[in-house]
Amino acid sequence: MSYLKQASDSFLTRATLQLVSVYYWIVRSSGKRVAPKSRRMNNRLNTLGREFYLKMWRGAAESAGARFEAEPDGAVEIGRGNRRIWIRDNVTSLNEPATVERAADKGAMLALLARSGIAVPKGIVIGVGEFDRALRMLQSSRCPLVVKPAGSTCGGAGVSTNVTNVKRLRTAVAWARSFKRQILIEEQVEGDSYRVLVMDGEVLDIIVRHPPRVVGDGVSTIKQLIHRENELRLEAASARPQVPIRFDVDLRNTLANQGLGLRSRPANGKIVVLKRVINDNSEREDVPANGRLCPAIVEAACKAARVVGTRLAGLDIICRDPGVPLERSGGAIIEVNATPGLYYHHRTDASTPIADRVLKRVFDLATD
Image (cartoon, rainbow, N blue to C red; front, side, top):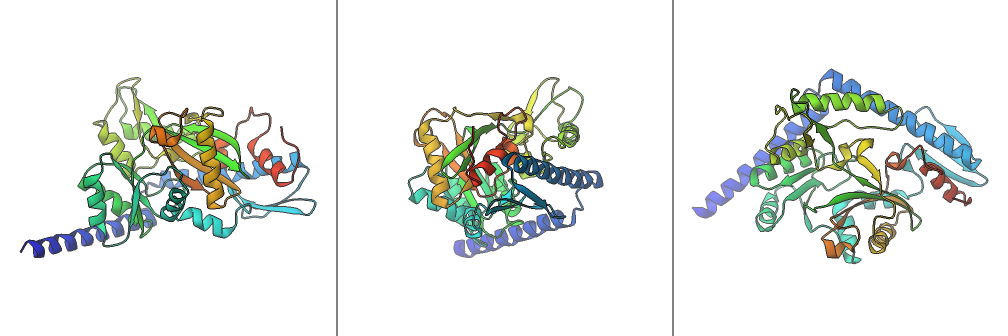
């Protein structure tokens, strides 16, 4: 009887996960739960982001003395002499398609890094019908879990952090599965999140990315504060691409860990961290961090980019102490992005803008 009950429970769990995954997929695809105002905001932000990249690459081409040709869809060809580079927003021809595909397979990419002696989170990849493996990892782990699609979804979509119980695990797996069938489950790494931009084995820039947050006024609900913050981001998007704060599983988990919900009204001046998924933060929460990471961490980042095979990559590193090797602080490289968002590194006060530095390396021009 116990065996039959276990089999029955397993079947019900799989069926429930499948139904919830389908529900999430329908919601995302149809947009029925997304207000028209939010849809218009997303479309406007996407348009402004494309305009930003066109302006950024055009200015960099002029600085490099290169030809600049833009297509109606936003694709760009930049050439100087007999060299060419093709770009669309943050996607460049610097990385071969096979390399981009390798980096997008998160489970295989992290396994590759681990075999090369690089610190990565402990994790497993599960397929449909393997929720029991996820449950065993939850029960054996001493820290919260992170659940994410095993393939690239861009911008942290489908990622849930702070997974600490079975209910959260079921929800997180169903949410991730609405994006990809294969799911990556990792032990959560604590510390600050650093983005290291590496090109041809050298670090171009480092920033520390703080989580998205809002500040209470004693009157507004957290939901109202988020909508207000998204409006501010829309206003700022012409100067640098912005993304809206998304209402998802990670938002709910992060608020719940603080004893809060969307209807909570934080006190005046109280800072509320909204998510651990860094991708939804704003430009105000990205801080230059060049020189902050110790040589061992910098070397690990360059090695990881080399192992994956990228010429240009943005590496996400989480650690508590940037002054010691990752192994000593319990830190890890959690991502190698073969299509890194260069706008994170764009600073108007920089002597040489980041896109200029990329093109000057492409065309073998002297850099500052």
